[in-house]
Length: 328
Image 1 (cartoon, one colour):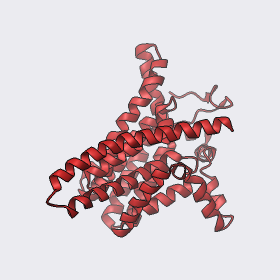
Image 2 (cartoon, helix red, strand yellow):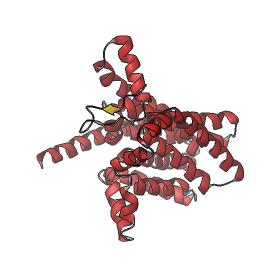
Image 3 (cartoon, one colour):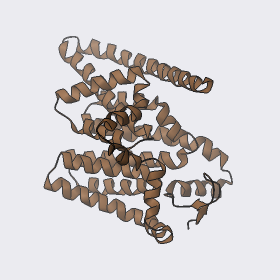
Image 4 (tube, helix red, strand yellow):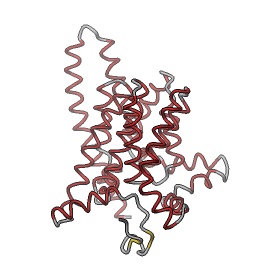
């Protein structure tokens, strides 16, 4: 059962056309405990912590390096954009969608490396759950799957990806059908436009110079953090050196067509940065094979110091940026 309108969200009285899964989880908690404030305070941060698990395995599946997974998790965990999007109260809908999206993409890449029917089904299942939780994360899953399938094509991959996407859409039909019958298909386009997703195409149509302006505008979460820019630059350099362009092309696509979604820009940036740091670490181990054990221990200590330093730096930077905005 879904209400027809939302009386208190935004200006009030707007159609209730939101993916409902996160709200159903919220309602179950209220029914069992009679309390809602505890859920709003505690569950979004808990969901956010849980999301680091599929993020680690996704990074590992992409780069086949435990160091890459560890660095990616550290960088993502310190992101104020990901924190605000998922650990605040709005995370009751966004954070579960984030978890489902990461699991869907993880099983999609696992299928790339180890094809199996289970991976096809799990990719589609979590894609459907992401759609049922938040439309933006469902779209992110869809674009990721399509992009990787088309940039690394084979007939088998195209068929398997199509099956996963159809399965996810089939699961989401339990929400899409009633919403479409109530408000029509235009409600979904309105939802994208409300987040300025529809503005990108019109903005780009104004001329080639608009591309550069849009990139500058949408990379603000990265450009405002000098250390993050350097780390992404290192990762991009090694990806280009290995002639692995898919993630970089997808990153550009997200920057261009996911405006006002800084969390996605930082998420992919953390994957690239984590890969760059792990590559540096692994090359150091290869350069000094005789001192590998000692170097591994030293680098482990360095990793701990990096974690502490990165946490401090990002925390300081977030506070400094917020204070600057408040004094302007």
